[in-house]
Image (cartoon, rainbow, N blue to C red; front, top):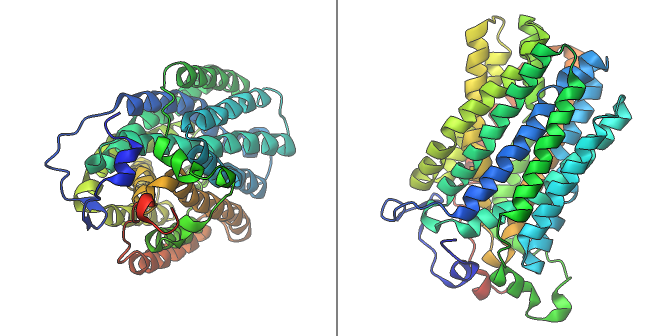
Length: 433
């Protein structure tokens, strides 16, 4: 680990340049082994989760014969159920000083949920299993990202997140590819995909538990443990930071018009009517682009500013909506949608966590990251459920055009909301410390 938590809370902060770092070009980039191992854990876990996600739209609407409204509810759960525990998990990581232990609990819960897919066969069973899986994701994400943030060089924070997301998306691309080959060899071989998913989940938990060091987040723990009676007193004071407050508003507004990937792929499949077994390759294409662009986008965010890259990522999502709604189709239109969607994730996923970490006092790092992720999860849950109803009411293309119009308005609003967003003061000199 190249910086410690005490470095974050006690050292000087660089002068913000649009949430970029002026010294990023002067300090050579070095990757912490902690980030590498966390990337490997995320990689195998994403093989597990994305192999299921790649077949879930077809499994629900085709194999089980449920409606797009039912899939909208399930996809909404998939997007937002993690919000139930994200802030609590981040707070627990900050207060205990052991983010790895909290993350391990989350990974383990998701692993156990994989078993349920082997026996589920209806809407309520699938909804319950997806809920458990996503709660596991909610528990693990903020503590894991806090570990990344404190293990990274501050001058290369977004780039370090980019490396992690790159490794993460190797798994995100491999999972759907595995699902594709399974369905190619075994028609309707959904249960086989579920078995493979469980196996990779077990590997991810084992690597995290046995290899990733249990870093004691001393500064985080100290910020809440200086007085023993305050150890379990949850505080919302981090939300008073003006920069973080603006980010939460912006992320929530954008999340309300960010529909799930599965719906975009169903729109493409509905228009072009390609064979079912090719469906998982849509997930592969998006994640390959995400994989290729994650580090370059992180480097760009460190140099020119995280906010411009974050906004530009949503412009790419807007282009995805418009292209998916176009009256013409074909292979190149589909490829264009996948490239744009992958660029959206590369420009927003790790960058959002890096932004939140810089806008949050260091003593509440995991809680601040979790707050941003919670807002995104909740709003995207509403977006997916709403889009399912909208599709049912007006059709796929019209629903996509309406979503695009709303996203365009949201992007314009966010440009003004995030103007002047500034870093948080260190926790040890804050009135709320």
